[in-house]
Each structure stands twice: as C-alpha cells, then as structure tokens.
Image (cartoon, rainbow, N blue to C red):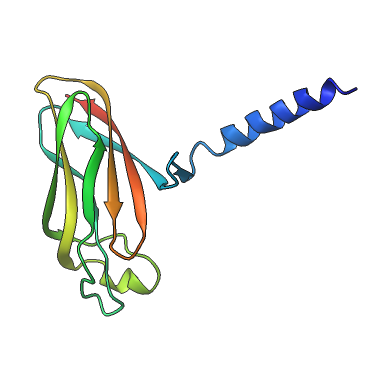
Length: 142
C-alpha cells in the first residue's frame, strides 16, 4: 500500500505539470514568465512585441525598460523606444486602445534564408516594481 502513494503523487504531479504548460509561469529567480508565439518572415525585421505603462488618463506613466536575457540562436533582436499603437490594453485602460503612444518595442530579424524555429527572452521592467520575462517562441517561415 505504501508503494502506491508515491506512484499516485507522481501521477498527480505529472498531470498538474501538463495542465500548466499554457499558463504564466515563474522563472528560477522568481520573475513571472509570459510566453508569446509569433510567426515571422525569414530575413525580414519585424516587431514581435511592445510594452507600455499608462496612467488612467491614457498618458504615459513611464517607458518600460527591456533587455534581452536570452539571445536568439538564428537571428538578432533589437529593443527600440518609439511611438506605437496601443491595441490590447484592458480594464480601465481599454479606452486607450487605438492611441499612438510611446512604447518599448522588440524587433527580431532572422539570418537570411533561415527557416525553422527560434526563441528569445526579454526581461521587461515597468518601473513600478513589476517585472516580467517575455518568452518569444518564433516560427520563421519563407
């Protein structure tokens, strides 16, 4: 009977791990991780993400900072402060959608002719204590 308990716990742990694969996770150093799946064109520089930090009146509180903590293996990444269209703000900030505001944008460009998958991780700090690792899983197509 005692042999059944570890097997049952292992089974429960495996099921729990499988059910969490699509969720926000936490890195070893305690930073939340958010996965993003993107399809990009080989050799073309494309914006794969952007971050902003808004006040309730839609003015910009501060620009988030982003740094790449895991470089892509098959391309290069750049972080740029620019104006961008806010389109996915939620809650009280949803009324800010469709505004062009200062954002921190992340761009990716694969090596010329490369087709396959790539990955990069950017750590974004919003300046108010909130930090998140954005994990970009990239599918590079022709």
